[in-house]
Image (cartoon, rainbow, N blue to C red):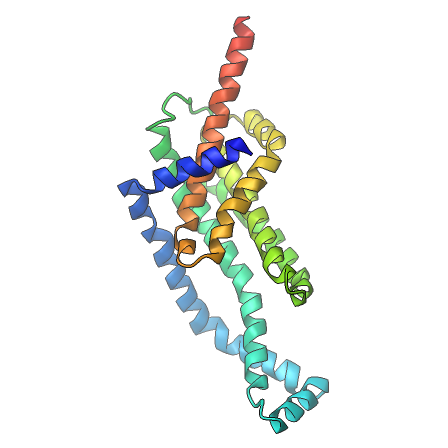
Length: 249
């Protein structure tokens, strides 16, 4: 846990660098554009389809009529809107993680690699296609799991815990790969991930918890990339130093 907290603390300090503060604008602007496009192209057709599917005859139609008789006329509107939101949010979050992985992480890695981790040799390659494929594959699993677990949202506490765990899994799955890709050889990367899955997930839990704290969720994308980059580069430095000492002995 000490390594995780150290990486998070270093990420907070790095986030205050002017270059990293400027980088915050990129995911924010892309998110605004993505939300606007979604609202324009998807929201109205989706809510209309859900309203027809749910209330075009059947039990819910009768429930809505009885609710309207008791002064709850908005039932036909807010239930489809709530379901549409639950369907759209996982896709939007996954899209944000993909954008950070492809656009922000390379900038973060090169910023840190030219600074306090300049001694960590680059032995891998940061391929945009490999990063994109990894992010898309993880996002697909995330969206399916998120939708399958929606019934658990009916339990009050789980309504917060389930999305937090899903978001954290996705962040860990995507960012651990990207934070190692440029500096670690493939075998070295696989070994680092296999040996530190728990720490990577704990780090993801820590940074994604900020999504529940407005307006801190605005810094989560870049701060997450910084936290994972700090953890991975420090890990590579330590592991290589240990191997060098062992070989020298």
